[in-house]
Image (cartoon, rainbow, N blue to C red; front, side, top):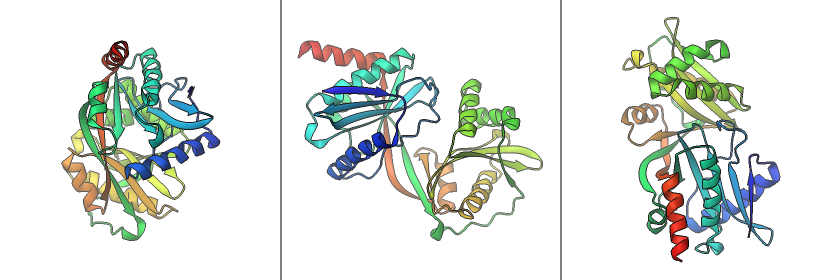
Length: 299
């Protein structure tokens, strides 16, 4: 067994990972692939991908998404032929060491329903935290709902940074410094754009878009709490979709917390439909590490 740790994924490595994921998704009857983009990770020097090889063949990997210092999201796959043989545990130990080195207290293990067995979650001390729906809208199916509000959508620049931070804090209860980091990274990263909603000459909303060939992924759509309940979120979304579909975008996707009924209603009214569900299981790094080492001593 050889384990590699990297903080950058080049094209040949991405092909290796996708080939492994194809074997896993076919065996597990799931569809989602890991988002390997690292442009929003808060620690650029941190290793985020951990790879396990046997006879020069990639058989397992763990990948971290680290948008804040509070928690990291963990995506993991193991080749069906090599499961229950300790490869995932070896990778996870290396991953935990890296996360602990950067003082990140929690990990959210991410996967579609059924991907992680209950026995594995119990073995790791992982508990269910929440679920998200993956929603999609194709350009051919888009019929914009009527909206009478006069709202303008503009592309963000760093000149509006302080106001964008205020809206992020107001909309999502973000920490100001973490909001600043995320907005700056989103605006400076390749293949990403930030948009703002302007209502009566005031910036009242924010949203970000990541482009991948003919697909666009929306994230971070929020309206200043002082302007919520007026239909501005729906209007902002419609104007943004109009703009995206006027380009070479064929489909738009987004993730939404399954508990957020207001956001779900807005997206469904615009034509989005759920195509997948993703579960999040919380692990406390120090506790999970202690559980793993304790089991190893007993074995």
